Image (cartoon, rainbow, N blue to C red; front, side, top):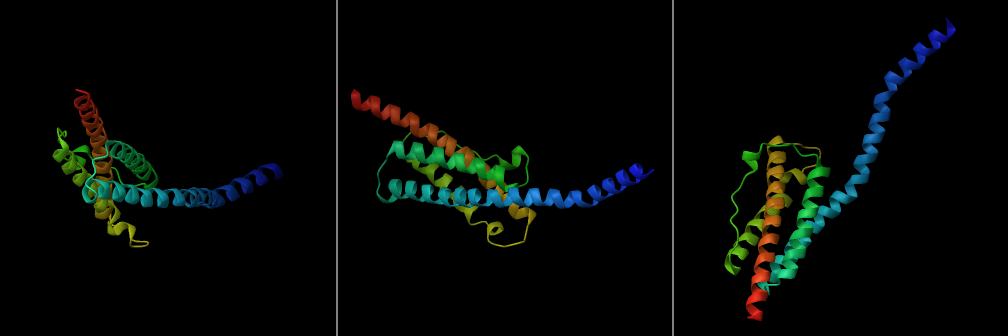
Length: 172
């Protein structure tokens, strides 16, 4: 009888304190992710700004810089999408048209699309208003991150193709 009573007390204690344990674990995970999210958010902007400055201000078409920059942008955007726990949206809401760049001017236009997506994401009020979660702003952030991932990958591929064609043209 005493053992049954003790089991019952133990189970009751576990049920009332399991949420505390779960909350501690969740808080610890969220706190440990915050520096990574902050770093990804910051580097996404820095890498984009450096790339845009090189291409548009210095007017230097550095394919290697574009390749490495877009690769880092995509990697950080993927990690942000995973760590920010933003809402999932259907594919058709996220889909934006992106045309393959066949020349320098089209590559620049693609870079501007990527930049616009990044700037829309980083200036989203969702990240500036503490303790306020607006579903519409969260959806916009999700769409922007999807665009960043897609555009950075497409620009990287286009820059790689254009780089190869420029090298082969230089050899001939």
